[in-house]
Length: 478
Picture 1: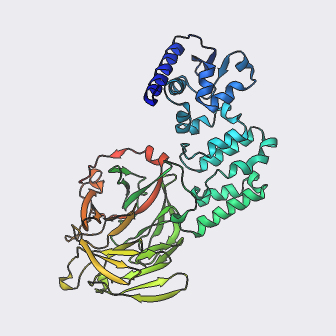
Picture 2 (picture 1 turned 180 degrees about the vertical axis):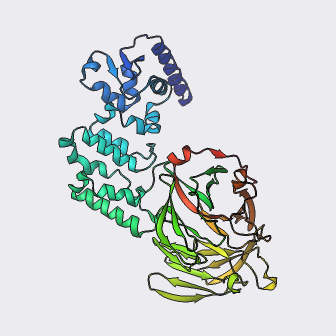
């Protein structure tokens, strides 16, 4: 029998067993849900389909011996889906995709440490944030505190510490079970140190599949949007609080330690937390938001333009001071020294850029001649200390943002030749050395005649947050 014939036979066999289940033919177990619905099934099918059911049906519970198992945390509609997965697909897929609900069930909390560790170590469990995994462990331990707290260390290594926020790591460090275990406490303290001083883009651990998505975030007065290039979708995140001042083209927005910071002249800095999709106001402000703000190795620097590894590069000048220059220099944040690098091909003021793979890309700004806006883009090779022109923007602008996401360059924000907010987003195609108009910030769907400029950066958003947001009906242009 060929592999195709074997597959066809197995599919047909499971279809027939499912029909028998629905007809209560040769069924030997009854599953009762929290709304008192009863479902007949076959023990051998459930046990073969999933280690979860196998463990459950091998237990010595009275209900199990009598052929009746009650599920206090599962409704009839959910059980219907589970049994369809068991008989026509795989129950494991259902458990993984509904892990937060399954992990609260008494049946799950009765699993031994080996089986519990097997689930928690999986890349595929669906959790909204990594903190959910630690909460599940605590709930599992609470079921038999005296015996189970001794195996915390075995389960604790399945918590991906680098994806916990600094605030939540403090809760972990102060947890009573963690404090009593030297290895767990040291692991948590090391993670807290990384969260405080390291660059969030250099995490040693990998995220769970589907846990986080990197998106382009566009921030303007009152509005915060995210763009998912792989889906060509816009979603509206939490609005900035009422009463916040108009967002100017020179007001910087940066990502630091997984959160977004919005700076405004002579006003408090605002911080957006993507884990809970909300804003907070910090007791911190800058006198002059005309400064460029960058983040290097977890630290925020003012008066920078582009960060690359341990260096802050200051490139070009500011037209508000009549500075149209081609000069470029960099600051070494480790050695605390300045160094001049090669001049750009063109004088620029109010330009913007980003670093990517030993290269620095700079575009836009104003030129001395006629105080005109520039469309040109230049690339600096850090290894050879040379600049070269690499295509031109479709729309000239100043004070924009250049962003690198998945090794692709995007430009958004700033002001255009009419001194109006630029809402178009362009993407660089390296195969053609050409900038392509990709989409538009969809603010006009909520506010006609928008006058506010947008700043942007790349931010990691959790699957849980994104799934709760509806797609904005802005169709991409290309």
